[in-house]
Amino acid sequence: MKLNLQIATTLGLTAFSTGIYSQTTPAERPNIIYIMSDDHAYQAISAYGGILKDIAPTPNIDRIAANGMRFDRCLVTNSISGPCRAVILTGKYSHLNGFIKNEGQPDFDGSQQTFPKLLQVAGYKTAMIGKWHLGSIPTGFDHWEILPGQGNYYNPDFINKDGKHTEKGYVTEIITKKCIEWIDEVKDSGKPFMLMMHHKAPHREWEPGPNELTRYKDITFPEPSTLFDDYSNRGTAEKTQDMTISKTMRIEEDIKMYKNRSKMKKTGLDRMNSEQMAAWDSVYDPIIRQFYKSDLKGNNLIRFKYQRYLQDYLACIAAVDRSVGEVLDFLRKSGLDKNTIVIYASDQGFYLGEHGWFDKRWMFEQSYRTPLLIQWPGIVKPGSINNDMVSNLDLAETFLDMAGTKVPSDMQGRSFVPVLKGKTPSNWRKEHYYHYYEYPGSHMVKRHYGMSTERYKLIHFYYDIDEWELYDLQADPHELRNVYDDPAYASVRKDLHKRLKKLMKKYNDSEASAQSFLPTKPKPRP
Ligand code: CA
Image (cartoon, rainbow, N blue to C red; front, top):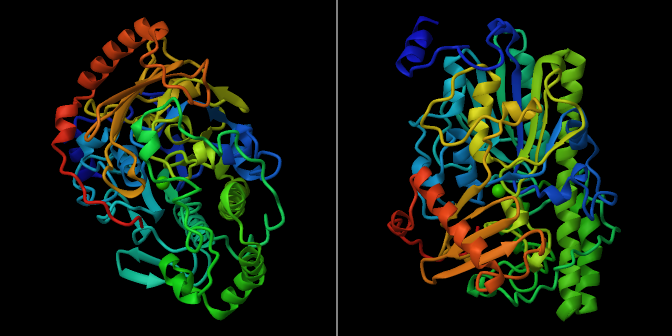
């Protein structure tokens, strides 16, 4: 404790000097459970509505929305896994935390300031369980157990302080069990706790668990209106990307239409034991046989791939939803629910066929927006919906504020605890800054930075091109028409440019500094 106080003083922290818990004792500080899935699109959470809500509901994740607040404008700063995770830990943009992309990237520098470390100093017990995806070993956690790299769905390996070991079963279920065991272990320690519960699902290769294999087998999902987008009225970046269901999505690996078992190694399905394999084959074999017999072409093949994609992706989510239900039930049974904040989020958004795409990366809505649901008994009004522009840049600051701990001045986001209390400050952000770097690389989405307001989006694609795009979300919610050169938008364009320049200065970013990051060599995607 003496050491903790010393560290606190060195870091300039005065415990409980600010925030809403200044009148309470440490014992009353809330526990924080941050549940994050990988690549979970808001379109695939029924609390968010959308075309899938009735056909693939998520009743347990929806409980968090019903008990708390649904954020409709939670945006990310750089829509790709590792970088998002680094932003969440540090409260800093990629160019300052040093983790700018997934590929060709040094490991996350775990010696830097992160919010779990600051919570430890403030007396919290901390843990990180599940997918980490930052290369280096986690720091700032009393307990950690992570999947190596992308992790496997079946019989996954885990790494902890003692090294690597393999566990039998399905990854979502194993992570859930480990998390509940840890909460049970620390709940009577006299200290508040903070748990990062990070699911691998529903990240590619979208492998449903034994309990969800047949969940959507016979379901036909509605198609998004832009499934056959031809990218007209947009620029080079949209026309030259490599992330379409049509051309990029692989028949064998992505939608698992294996003609030959040796291919299964690429996706980790070769880790299955004979019992798991038999259950898998009983579902997939008839689909595979029918597929090769039908010899689909053109739009019919795209439609088939879209259906297979969603069947598997949503079945993975069904297991995540069950996991969330188990955590909520455990909290209620143990009485922890009254003083525990539960957050459900994804690392970033994802395309479910919109613009003909899967994957993420773009500053367009489906990957730029990410789901965020928060329940906080006694503080957040149940069933509330918020439209303020919040960001993954704000999470570290918000968690520290929830714990009544001072937010360091070098973090670049802002605590949205006042927003959770229904009292959004009048000077809350009116624009949000974005910067994506991973090009050349998987899916060949060109480097871009930009800013969005409530109504508009200004984007600059750079590096090997120099093209600006402007979208009016009110007139064009599906982002199908770049109006940058439209004279009707001349004054809007001028205003947005001015505001973008200010934002870049505020966050200490520039195109020149971005150009200095070394290019990565194109590699086959993982
Ligand atoms: Ca991700």
